[in-house]
Amino acid sequence: MSLKNNLHNLKEKYKGKKIAPLFNGFHTFLYLPNETTHGGTHIKAADDLKRTMNTVIMALIPCLIFGMFNAGYQHHVAIGEISKVSAGFFSSEFWTLANLGVGALKILPLVIVSYVVGLAIEFIFCIIKGHEIEEGYLVTGMLVPLIVPVDLPLWMLAVAVAFGVVIGKEVFGGTGMNILNPALTIRAFLFFAYPTWMSGDKVWVHGAVERAQEIAGGANVDVISGETILGSLAQSNGAGYSVADMFFGFIPGSVGETSTLLILLGGLFLIFTKIGSWRIMLSSVLGAIVMGLIFNGVVSSGWITESSKFYGLMSTEFWHHLLIGGFAFGTVFMATDPVTASQTNKGKWVYGFLVGFISILIRVFNPAYPEGVMLAILLMNVFAPTIDHYVVQGNVKKRMKRLKVKTA
Image (cartoon, rainbow, N blue to C red):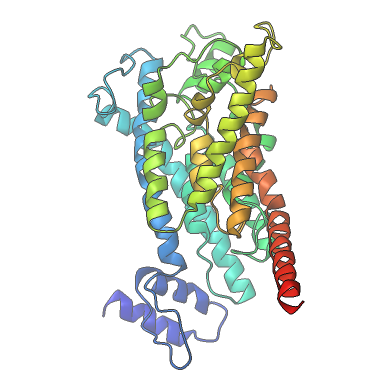
């Protein structure tokens, strides 16, 4: 008997019982529904929530694979086994099995823990509440491993995922009801609960933390420094990487955020499939550029000197801000979350612009953590309903004025 028939039989056997959503979820995840609507007018489309989520995951897969290679590459560069790549995106020193092996060994466990813990909680809540399994965590489960450092302990990730799913989503009613992006809620929990594992110059390269601990214990080993570009600029030490490195992704950082090229391709794919909002992406970029130009103008005017602790990031070319840190990844895959972002077209322009504008503002003026896209998106998640409210009220007032003119 086929798996499809077995699942169908289990659905029928436990129909009406609390455990039924578990089998329904597996059945609809693996197979298309065989039910046909009758009567009335219906939207006829082949997609559903699971297929939409799977499309987003497809856009994330290139970032995941590249992140594995980059994690191994950064490790081998740090210990002196290979030299920095300078031959372009298809360099033979980067795309090696040695790099992939190290990266996969560190990153795949993050993916597994993220999905196992998150989906287990989703299953438990659907059984307790007696509703169908909500597919929202399919994307969140992939996003979370891509926005954390490669050496993050698995137990910390498990605790954070449990917090993010329960407190960040389920208490609001589940998928579609949450007011904050679940993946960023998980990352915010990690940042505030375990700050030494989420910031600094020892968390972005595999092996750096262990070396630091060995040195602290008196061991005679070489230190591994994995400082990100943002951390270096915050200290006014210069970027240390070429524009090509920043664009292709040969830099330290969170697992999936380094390659602007692949993030851009993922964004175009989401726009083509009409899942990601191009308005939010474009307006976020415009907001970041405006804020970057303002800072460049302040530096050019002489108001900020090189002795200022803000000089490094303020003097950075405005368009460089688009290539470094998590700005590109956050803009494409998180700011566009259809649940927590603005819903109206005009609201999307305002929402996205403020995400980009505030991201660079926080990035420059936050001395403890030179990055701002996470906090900017979470802040705008809170204000998205307010933005939409005023957009709708503005449209209502315009229509009322037209009505008065016609009836006058």
